[in-house]
Length: 175
Ligand code: HEC
Image 1 (cartoon, rainbow, N blue to C red):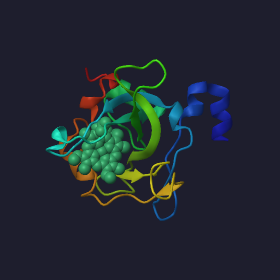
Image 2 (cartoon, protein in one colour):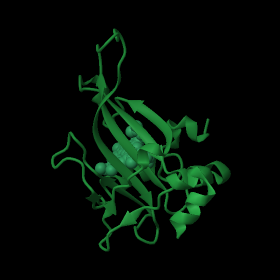
Image 3 (cartoon, rainbow, N blue to C red):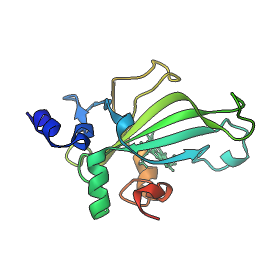
């Protein structure tokens, strides 16, 4: 019924997707997230001291925000309950075709999610890993939330807006 109403209303409505969970709070991977709003990308971003000096391969991160939450954030500057952000990781490709300098987002490696649901998760936000072609077990349909100290703690301490790293997503309107 909701779907019907959506189809009759707007195309944007079609892209909206509520987060879905199993009864034991595993998150199901959202299907249409590649059609969500692109909010930012980074190259070679690492969160460990000393990483800058290492010769580690640089990956691209690409972040998408579910469209209903995007609109709400534009209006209020707040992330509503049910907000989902998906972060894809790509290898940096070089020297293909006519490319001689620089790099491009090449192979899709894996995808992670951040979800705001204060009824379900202590601390409101929960973090998930859905694997990908580069991960053991491939791309996963469902994922169990990480323990708070693995992901939530850093996001809570360092992210600019309600656990989300808006300081790195100028498209969200912070700058
Ligand atoms: C030490 C700090 C730190 C830890 C620990 C951390 N992150 Fe992040 N995370 C970041 C930063 C910085 C960004 C900004 C975007 C980027 O990396 O390109 C980010 C962005 C994200 C995003 C995009 C949405 C957002 O909130 O900005 C997701 C999804 C995400 N991380 C998932 C995870 C998961 C899953 C874990 C745990 C396995 C995790 N993070 C652990 C620092 C951290």
